[in-house]
Image 1 (tube, helix red, strand yellow):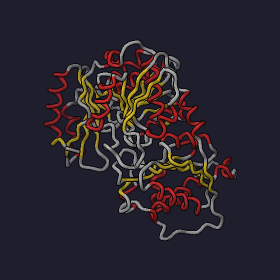
Image 2 (cartoon, rainbow, N blue to C red):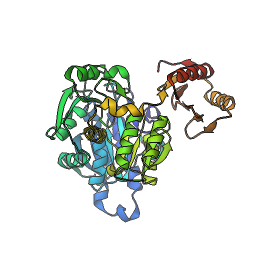
Image 3 (cartoon, helix red, strand yellow):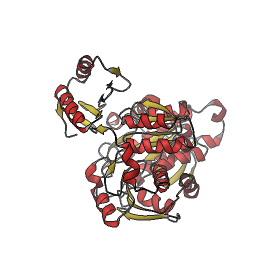
Image 4 (tube, helix red, strand yellow):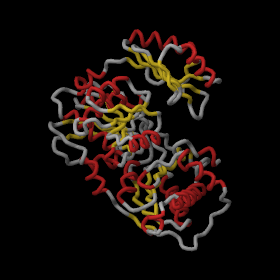
Length: 459
């Protein structure tokens, strides 16, 4: 059961058959042991750093799982600062605001209500994934046959960081003209935090749907699925809002729609915000995931920035943003990363930045975005493939005259079109992203590639 819930970037499974209170206790204990052991020598003797920040989302199973997690942490002799029901981005803020060795958020992000899990961060909110400690925590967890009692249990205190967090997020908001925004909180944590942070801002009118934080979802809290945006799109049109935004369950991701209710791809948002940040950070590095439209690289270069292409996944994005001293980064999944947010992602900050850009222009969102829509993309398409490596090798042979790299799967680039094919970590699937200079060429190349890869999947 333990191996089923430990994923590449977090712990996640269905409650209570895969993830229950007993396992939560063991994960808490193992994480505390691991993070305590990773403290640098100069901090190891400072008692304040021998504690973890813990938060949770609004799922029905979150209070009991979080309580068990806290018991496990304390049994390892590590203290806990419980910051209550929060959006995931707040845990990154808290870990940097409070002296501690890391933090854990109880959440299953965009998954349906029967799921839950844990997102683990280390010192200064560095992500703990498969290659940076999650495997070690899993091994410690698997070795626990009972619940060891601590000779000196860690302390437990509660803290409310809303005022400081609100100030931090609002530092990114600069509105020049009035905006009317329609918000779909997906019955997730945005329903609690977006009103608390943005409720009284001049020039900002908020209209809202699905704000009730009950642990039940009107639609699945995953804004990357187009059908989950239909309600938002209808409301944007009926209320004549300037823009709409839909957050995922733990509110660390968001997807926008323009005033005509057209979905704005997240790589287009990356391109727009890249230029915004380069205006005050000339020459800075901007990190983007390799599935992104070519327009991202073009816009960064046109604005005098340094484009840095990175593989998919928050662990890679955060690491590269820090190492390259980048100012901003964006992924196709709706995660946006900010240097001034400890190199971490935040749905609330992405929301604030997007509004700031739009309010700086007198045109509607669709017109602001129109010059960025110069490439034609397929979106991500999954194919069922038994021999994933063999298929990638055949593609490399077929397109040997192109510029090819293997940063993440295979990327094949020509002057007027390109594609990337990546392997799924968990399923017999290959994921294709393709882009071309014209819609006709994109369709033609998509047909050409599809025949070589396999059967399109419903996943």
